[in-house]
Length: 478
Image (cartoon, rainbow, N blue to C red; front, top):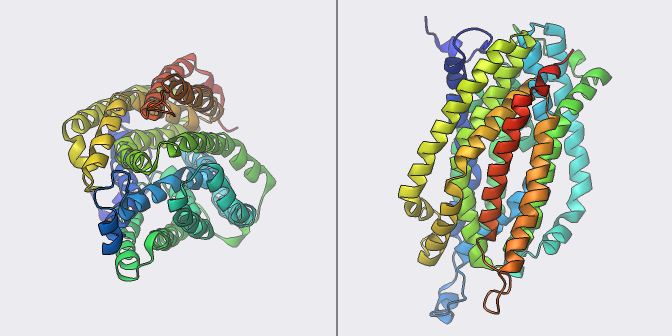
């Protein structure tokens, strides 16, 4: 019989029909991921609509084709910060991945003691990581932005956004890690609820700080930090109440070498993957910045729509990680293979539907972010290049999730390195170089999206090959 309590209880995915359990687990997480994507999306919409030029500036630049409105420049500034912000979050993504895998496998094996130490140690490890990252990175924000060819007109906004985000890193880190632990236990609904609360709070604070207090880009950064602190506190409260599954006491927070090493060993490849990916994005962002503020803004609009289009892929990938981890912990490899087939097919079908929606309604989606007609048209053309690649990404994320859940986090890492570093960067710069003309000194702008599409297709081919090879079946925690 259905009850509200059962909705928020961990899900045992070692029993029942695989695809039903995967979909049931994925849906609330998908809604949650969409809500989380709203953080940066709302930031972009608010700054583009509420940061405006003075009447004098608009009058002075009337008819100037090179003039970029303050809202579009602010949109470019917020988006330009994301590669660097994602690089800063890479460490915590790694801890989250390691903790989630350990939690799902120990939950599947019904090992209460190891589950308790895994949760406690990941919380302690995160605290040390936050302190170290703040002390290490604060002095280098501005130099890195300058090195990335960030336009002078957006540099100060970028510095403000990243400094506030860095000092509020604990809230962002703990939400990602604690929600990962909760999902590892099979509860994707609680994490969704807390994220929805934070998302609504973020929207109101964004508008208040930017429109009412005139805090510009710094306002949206502060709003995001406050909202994520709230969501992390709610996740911590939830874990403290799940004592029927593990013990949440101070003795389990004391760092134990074996558990810390396992978390790092399992999470390092995923964290390194994110760091490498983000570093590559910084290099690509440097090329993007050469094409001017309008193209930067167009690229950010594409990234915002792309972020929503990717959510089903990421959600199915995470769900299949938990599914795989629980079944590997229960030594049910037959169910892992069955779930991999069913989950990948559902993810690919979902991406096919999204591709059709983008092709039919792309311009309307771009118009949400800006009223500048030229920017909408440019964004739509760039988006059309990427649209066909979402099915390939569905395959990559699903099968990578299966391998990670089984304990093989290294193979997906190397695939990501190969496609991002050794494929995307050379392809982007090669297209840029070979299409240079006197009129296009940096080549065609589409080189950014074409290189990304090539990366997605190559990643799907490599991931499928390594999954079929089956090495991931020998990587379970002993």
